[in-house]
Length: 124
Length: 124
DNA sequence: AATAGTGGTAACCAAAAAGTAACTAATGGC
DNA sequence: GCCATTAGTTACTTTTTGGTTACCACTATT
Picture 1 (cartoon, chains in turn green, red, cyan, yellow):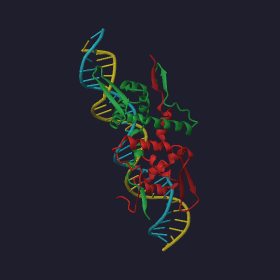
Picture 2 (spheres, chains in turn green, red, yellow, blue):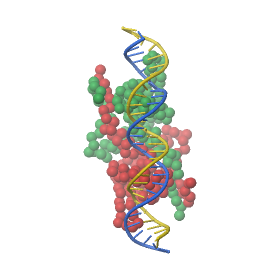
Picture 3 (cartoon, chains in turn cyan, orange, blue, green):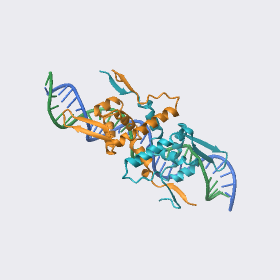
């Protein structure tokens, strides 16, 4: 009787996508940049609980995987803009569906859907 | 000038979905079970590189999140069947799209799409 | 008694992800 | 000189995920 098994999970396209975006911070970053290009400092301000170290690393990985475009201008102080590539834009509808799924699957949970709050104070 | 920021990433529906399925093993488990219910041992055999400890834990988490149904039969030896809930079935089309995205986004990569290999030998 | 079948569990460890705090570079303005 | 701006970088630490190994329970069979 032949045995069946998965030979190499890393060769699986689904797993590959998850490896690329399935962590704590990348979905948020992609969501924020879906509204248009953004500078490092703005991303950092919009996600108050992420460290500069981690943000830098996440942006670098997304760039390496072809999802982000990093555009450095010859300016002082330094100015760097991050924007989504076409590859990433193609992923947005799927992210939207993942978001919608949670809203439907857990109706008892009041999700904010990555709500952006406008205020003049930053939490302690 | 008002400042904007994300107040709580964990309240975000997209992040919630990622927290639930966005790790190393759960996409594979969901994929395998999309073909129909399965027993613990079969899952373990089909994913040769996962430990029983981790498989147990992943199944328990998926069950707690409402994606898996665990059905224990009054039999000896123990017999337990795992199957997808409707909640999980609703997620399958999205997983499929995540898979398709990788195939399109990285055409130079030859994904196996969680290919199941039939053979009578298990790798060393 | 030993072995088999099945689905685990427990104790400990390794690797990866994320966090903390301090520092850097290159100007420009006071 | 000091302070400000911006986008990092570095060294170390903590937390989380995943792995290893041995063991368990309850029969049934040899």
